[in-house]
Length: 396
Image (tube, rainbow, N blue to C red; front, side):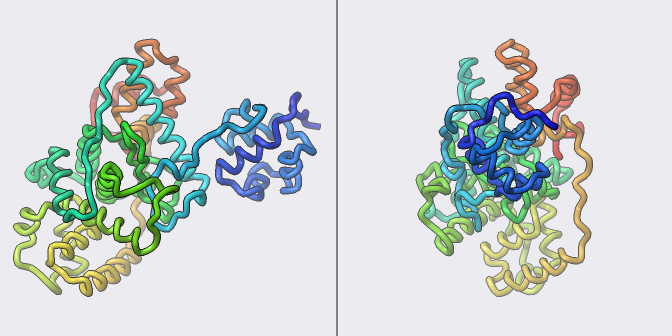
């Protein structure tokens, strides 16, 4: 018979850990292979789980097993006090996968801030602001100038992956941490912003295999950071707008992001005099490829610049969705452990952790936990950093 834990865990903490992880009792019981009644007994203190079962809970909740024996649950702020409002997601109703992703990104940000402060390094200040009373094109022009990406360079990029890595590096240079998160359904969220200063965070869902879509999501989230810096947005837990009122904010961010990716003068030049019905499901993607952006973002851009009207835009979207339904899903390819680390954590974070380890400010075990990478891969990671983007393995 399996041995029970030598010391009974705190039932209150067991309940806290499950709820904080976003799991219903039935999900936990099924994963551990026990009846729901047994889990209820553990959480009521009527029965003690075995050591193996506690290990299972620890792994499922992504918490150290020692936390279960604390006298009371840790006091942590609600996740919705950190991230911006997301369309269709009520605060507190995040999936377990999204909750874990937010926790990991928030922890990485805290680690970055701590290491920079310990080393006496200056922390970049993201100082860009935006207001909903401004034209989205004006916000986009200000952001584009700050990013320092020229139109000539953009039109010369050799691939969508070059575009994604260039936009990401430019955003990181503004004092924004850019992370990617796995395991979360695209239907729940494509991108997210953590409204914490200094070093606010943009998270991009790595299930999005199209680099053009990642680029748009990245810039879209930066616009939300600008709105938050301008006091136009609040974290999800305090954001008063819902429904149509919030959709107006989303549309503003979408339009501004599309203007960043396709500035008005160059769009007018490349789009020429072609208007109206000529912008079909073949013509829009062709123009989008010149800018290394998605067809949907380009359609949004054409609508905002008057190349197509709202009725045409709505019809185009129907035709485009029907076209997408006929295509085979794009494969994500194979990602190495090092590629996953670089893609998810980002180069600035990875470099800082390795520098801290080299300076004996953190241990190799701590570095491995921060990077979510086994120490045996560290030499490969250092080689990839020396070669830089374009050497392969920098994304999932």
